[in-house]
Length: 252
Image (tube, rainbow, N blue to C red):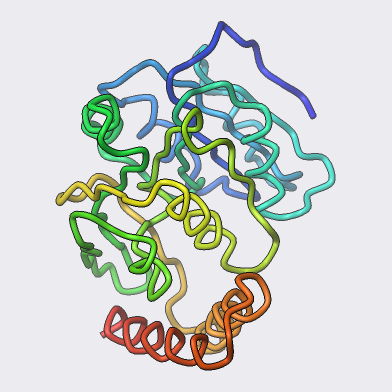
């Protein structure tokens, strides 16, 4: 692992894993550096990329960037865990190397977190389908509970931020739905999540034609219910039915 220069403890730590992201990572990095709230460190974990990802990261000079090299290249959850372990901020947030934040994201979320009523904050966000150039909106309830999260993932990983001094650092498991399981764990501890009712980020989907991915995702969800959470067969079936209906509605 190679680290950048640390300049004291930041308030917000942003975790960005990157693997062969030469086409998108510059826009992702710049969207964070343009934030109106500036007390953060951006931890970029290069997961042993073979393209020009490393060169692009190092070409952007900003003391708030901490560069980490995950030489073993073990995948996105491993890369995120490297960043989580290294970071020092009270608040931890995530942005993948093909997603972008809108300029006021952190400012608006920190206002709510600093008020002290919520330990976790997220927001609505846009979804951009690259193969069709269609933009859709993902909207969620204003207050999200653990039970809501069991039925469907209400936190886009690119919008979620949590107070690690209240929750503790939560690491990801290599289980497919690693983002979802991490936020599920966080929300169980936090009880409630506040979702800002506006779009504060954009999520990119590069290939919408892989129906097999939907089946794989469903199997990951079933595994979480049965193996990770150890729910009964009946409870798992009920939750899986609700999850399937919501997943279908989301795609329609």
